[in-house]
Length: 173
Length: 104
Image 1 (cartoon, helix red, strand yellow):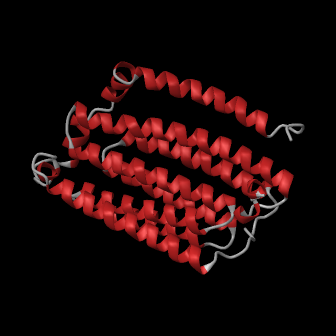
Image 2: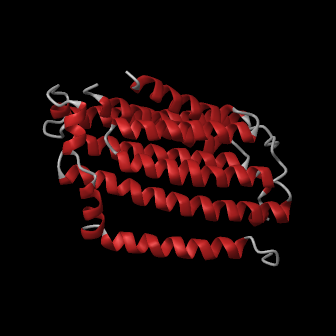
């Protein structure tokens, strides 16, 4: 019964991030959206991802964005308002993506054997699902099949750290 | 509650569209960055929604992919903000329409 409020918070946060005039408000409603998504991950039995989402997105990226907003002196986000053509183009592209994504989800979820039909069966309970869907396997999976990407991401983060430092150095420009 | 993945996929579609519209319409670089974050989150959500529909090890693969996506998103936000601050320092504006030096 908590599912719909969580969905509403995510959607409202996303809409607020787009339509807010003040950049600080936009960043804060983006935070509401990200928090709502973390709650949604709990509903989808991805507890570990939910925790990572809270730590990395809400605790890291969002704070970084807020810091950047405060740093830029342009807190009100003043810039020329978007032209009508840009608005129409953006709206059209976004609705096209939305329609095709919905259509794709509909087609795939109606295919036999993809499992959506299986999850519709009301046999499983909350507690049983959580117990059976052990998060311990996630770590095993990460260090077995996904080891190479894992190492690449580790190197990427190191490179990014150095690159960001190099970009914002005083004498870089 | 038994058809959560379907609703999550629809929500992911909405979030992606909102993010795309932000990137296309807004002219402040911060809004563009936030739109990109929204789109990445929509992709993560659809990954996890699909992982929920498959049980067993195949399903868990769908939870590993968002981990990498989140790590890359953190890297992207870090470098993106660094570039944004650097650009702001040299041009004193965040309006995307003013960054047209390569057109000349």
